[in-house]
Amino acid sequence: MVSAVDALLVLGIVAGGALVWVGYRVYRLSERLGRRSFVAFSVILGTGCVVAGVGGLVPSVLPLDTEESTWAQLPFLFWSLSTFPWFVFAVQYTGSRTKIRPRTLALAGLPYVVIVVDLGLSVLGFEIGYLSLVGTFVFLYVLSLAGGGVYLFMQKSSSYGHVPAGQGISLGLVPVATLAIWNLLGILDTTTLGIAGAYAAGAVVAAVGVGAARVRYGLFDSTPSIGTLGERALTRETDDLMFVVDDSDRVISINETAVEMLSTTREAVIGTPLKDWVDYGSEQLQASETVAVQTTEGTRQYDPQVSPVTDYHGNEIGGTLSLRDVTERDLREQRLAVLNRVLRHNLRNEVDVLKSHAEMLDDDEVAPILESADAIGALGQQARRIDQYVAGSTDDTTVDLEEAILSVLDTVGADDATVDVSVDIPSTATLVTNRPAVVGALESVLDNAISYADSTVSVTVDSRPGGVRLRVSDDGPGIPDWELESLDAGTESPLQHTTGLGLWQLKWAVRALNGDLSFDTTDGTTVEISVPDRSSERPTA
Image (cartoon, rainbow, N blue to C red; front, side):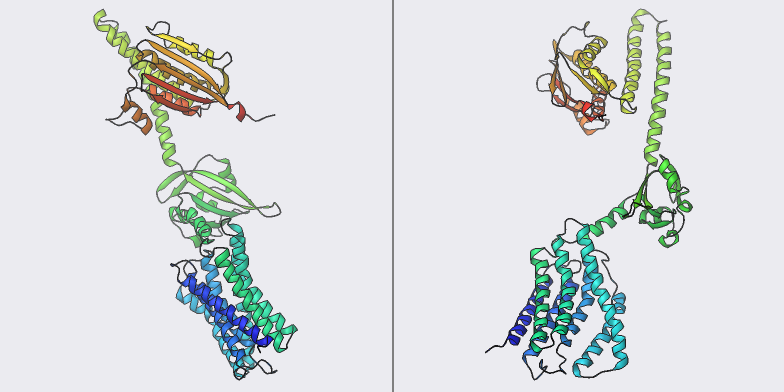
């Protein structure tokens, strides 16, 4: 008849076999962070359970029923040995450190030689005083590795939402609960049944924890390392200079981009004032729109962003700083501003000179010259209007669409045109938006429709939830495909370009309105513009 002790020993052996089996299944997976160290941890712990159980079933080898029995030392020996791969697994699996040098592993594993020797001699019945004393300190080291691994799992699984909390909890219970059960139950009940019960309970908890982590919570399917490594990649791959400073403006951390651009080393920067490296303190950076910083690529312009860091009590303990390189953006804006100003001024002056000289010629010769001069002047005025709502900041106002449409129709000469213009507008068609952009869009689309229509132009305004829809249709030849392709591409080339600024004015105006623009050239041209009402975006009192 099988005794209760034998049943418990068999249960422990089965649990140990389950640990080894999980390790084998993980070993069969493709190479992943922490895979090998997890296999080592699971197999060592499982092997210890099997060896202890088998030894207990053979009384002649390691009897459980004598006071001098050292059988209980076996689970502790294998548990202690398993904590080393356990910690390595925790470090790699959480992404805290992906590569560990063999030399580092060897040095970190040296204390385990003492454990093996001390416990091994104890199992054989030998006692060496000073070795046991050293073993005590080594055992504290082992406990710190076990606890450190548990902390990493709990901290990382709680930090990243994609990792089930149960994964960290079930894994963390394995080294902690196993040790606690084997230690406490053996002390509280020193009978053979109590010792066997503690052994079996610890083995089952270890098997259940590892099995649940792998099967129930997707161990190696959803890992916290992606969060850790992803955060590092963000700071490493970005072109921004990034710093972490304390409340005294001393640099606590710096990203690789900043190290390279400032031609320094991480060690040289850490602990030194931020002002030594970028010529500005965090308060100056926070108050500045752009700052000049001397780098390995010369003086560059940066847009600073400063975010305070506070502790759990709301105390500001430092800040994070990001400097984004805006040198090319600033130069481009300067070039555009200068070209825009010079072209508008010079164009107007040169057109006036051209017209004054043309008027001295014969009437037959002057008409085309004056027409071209007026077209050039109008182009300059159009560029100025575009600049008003593309580059400028315009406050939203209430726009009466009926008034705006009738005004623009008068401006583009609808009354003098040879086409029929019909307007269908609701009795109340008002919305809060960018008025210059509305006028710019209407000028572009109505002037184009009236200029190219064969006989009719229709303007329709429909109220929609959150805004209006404007449709302008004409029965002309339609806008050429290459002009629309250029507009869609967002640029012009020698072989693909528009014939003027009209379509660009329309596109940029609609963009300034946060609206949508579409064209239908199946039969003539129909332009549809959706304009949102921004009154809902205004803050309420």
